[in-house]
Image (cartoon, rainbow, N blue to C red; front, side):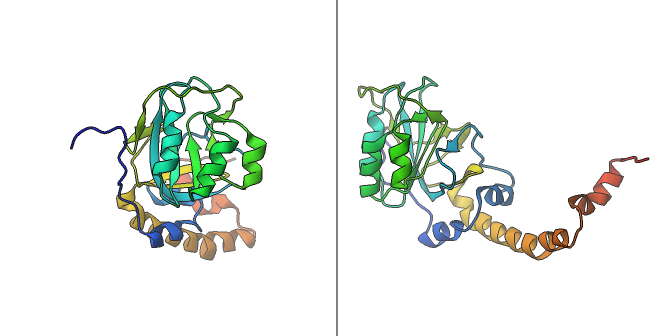
Length: 224
C-alpha cells in the first residue's frame, strides 16, 4: 500500500456493538478490558455530563496547525469520534464554535483532543461532547499537512482508526475494535455482578473491606 496522508476507508465496529457501549461507563469498560485503554486523566470533558461513544477517526495535527481537523470533518462518517493528537504540546485552541457547527451538521459524535479548544461557552451550549486537556484562546494556523486515519498516540495511548471511544465524566477509554465484542460482554457481566452482589451487600451495611478479608490476611495485616 502506498503512503497516503489520508485514508478514507476504515473498518468500524458494528452498530450493535457501538449501541451496546452507550450504556457502559468508561471505568467499567476499562476494568472489563483488562485495565487497558485509559487515556491520561489530563484529558477531561469541558463540561460535566458530557458523554461520547463511537468509532475513532484519528487525526495528527502539526504544531499549532489545525488544517487537518478541517479535512477530518469532511472525511468522518456520521457517528465517528475525532481522536486528535498534536505534533507537540504547544498550546492552542485547535477547535472552536464554527468547527463544532460543521461537525454536528455532518453527524460527528464528538471530539477527543490531546491539546486545547476554545469557544467553550458556545460548544457547551451546542451539546457537542468535547474532551480536551484544557482551554486556550491562542489561535492556530493552517499551513501543514498532518495525518488522518493512521495509528495515533493520543493521551499517552496508541489509538487505531475504528477503535471504540468511550468517554464520560471519569475520562476516556479506548477499546480495540477487534476486542470490542468481548469487552462489551465482560462489561455487561461486570455491571450485573456488581448490581446483584456488591451493591446489595453494601446497602445492608457491609463495608467494602469485607470483600477483601482473605487478601488482607494473606498480606499479613495486623491489628491491635
